[in-house]
Amino acid sequence: MTWGSEPMRRRLLTAAVALLTATLLAGCGGDAPRATPPGSFARDVDLTGQTFTVGSKEFDEQLLLCRMTIALLQSAGATVVERCDTKGSENVRSALTTGAIDMYWEYTGTAWRTYLRQEAQLTDPRDLFEAVQVADAANGVSWLRQAPFDNTYAVGVSAAAAQRLGVRSISDLARLARSGSPDATLCIDQEFTGREDGLVGLLRTYDFQFPDGALDTLEINGIYAAVAAGRPCVFGEVFATDGRLNALRINTLADDRDYFLPYQAALTVRTDVLTRAPRLALLGERLSPMLTDQVMRELNARVSVGRRSPDDVARTFLREQGLIG
Image 1 (cartoon, rainbow, N blue to C red):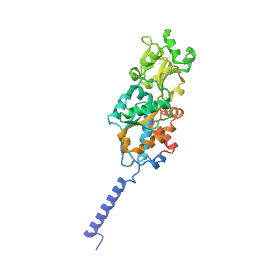
Image 2: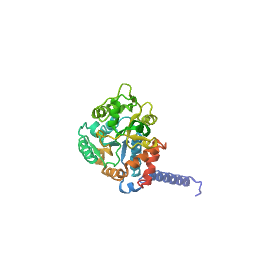
Image 3: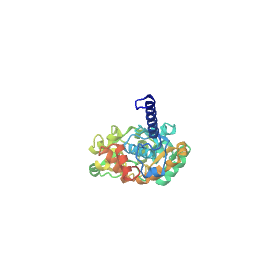
């Protein structure tokens, strides 16, 4: 028999097909490279074969939390459908409760006032978290461990303007507005005007109104630069852990009547999803304690000031902590 004979050609072809099939099957098996290299999280959590859809709101901190969650799930072998950057809190919450997404990071104060429609003023972060956790169980939503950082709403003003006007608290701003000062101007985003924990309640709690023309509605990301420049507003709605506060030298006014609730974040997961993948709870246990006020301000600044992508910042942080490879 020669190498060029028909029987030999058939044998070589059969062997080649078998080798190709084995290679393809190996590539589809459990040893296939993961979308995110595993680290310490994957040593304790195996989500191979599971698929999750992860969402978030549209601002930098939410994008970071979304990308961290995606990377950790991928490192544990899961397939992830990304739904980050959804506009509006109500839209993201609705996506969770209707099953369009499986999880996203939410804030306790937002859930208590906006979704659960509760009026009790719970100012202790632990008490608020436990109350939200219990109440939301009836909606089929489970709250994993909350993070220590508190991204509460705040009223911001440039350090220079605060000194010039002698304004350190929201009560000081209220007095300024009642005096008719042209500096009593406020920038807010559209969502803040209609939220249960937004503008209307703030004005009622501090018993004042802004004069006509003193309110400007901007995109949330534009408010920081506007406040720093003092145009078109001297004061503005800001988030307490935003990285631009330090960079732009923006002070936050003391909430001396405790209007704003704690807004500590936790990963919210549909209860049916957590039931089929209970090891998901370890994501909150491992990641949440690392997310302090200082850490979140620094990470947010890398995005908003340093112009790095949320995905890059999220993965760099997780690698630094050893959670992913």
